[in-house]
Image 1 (spheres, helix red, strand yellow):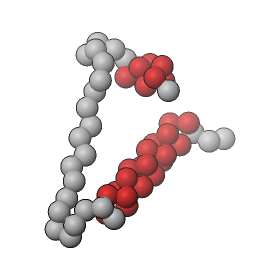
Image 2 (cartoon, one colour; image 1 turned 90 degrees about the horizontal axis):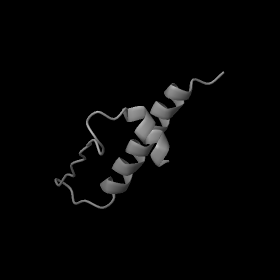
Image 3 (cartoon, one colour; image 1 turned 30 degrees about the horizontal axis):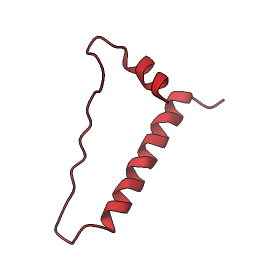
Length: 55
């Protein structure tokens, strides 16, 4: 049986690696890009319920 949480994390890492590969082809040598992660929602909201409801 596949662990849904493990699969979700793996897919997230694969998306991140893909983004880095895309950016690597678009930025000049010596330049960089920054990736920021932020929470969108109310502070009291349960993160998991918000993520699933927006999919």
